[in-house]
Image 1: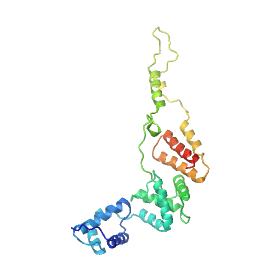
Image 2: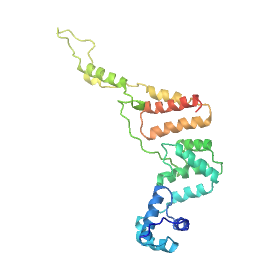
Image 3: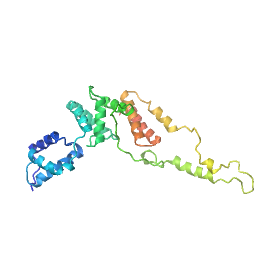
Image 4: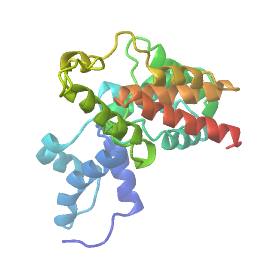
Length: 263
């Protein structure tokens, strides 16, 4: 079994072979595909060539992940960009922590296809990508969709940053006290502050969502369109992840503070 690493010629041969046979060669999926195809060749002390790759593919074809229609569409759009624009997109996508990026998944390719499809014919800039993301989220065209990483739902017992939600801790005993009150005092007189348990458990109708109102104010706190898009993207990502209004508001507040500090 050979121990020497693949040469530049062998790497080039695999790259071309993968392209010719629609084999995914990007991200973790690409690394897995390369290992599945090339390991038998290396173990047999052979060289990685189009001929040996074709022979290996016959044996491991059911383990290989091939390019889907979504991948091809995203790949075609990406290849139409200049090297500088490709670098701008990669840097921008890296900063979108909640967005499924170029990780070899169908969701990642769908995001690339949707965002670059919206920008088709326009120069790719970080500002333009912000606007494109916001538009695809809020007004997707047929076939367009944005995927986010699933986020764990945070318990209401804790607020942003893991701080204890003291307001909730104080609310719970009050509710229990209301339910546990006696309708009559020990001396037989009626307790006029008594609240029946079934009434105490009811939520007053029409109670406004204070956090929702705060969020609406925060979404209007911007100066540049790119700042508006960033706020809207954070809000949409929070809703998609099932986060509470309070958590979403805290994230928006961080973005607003950063803008005010000039970050």
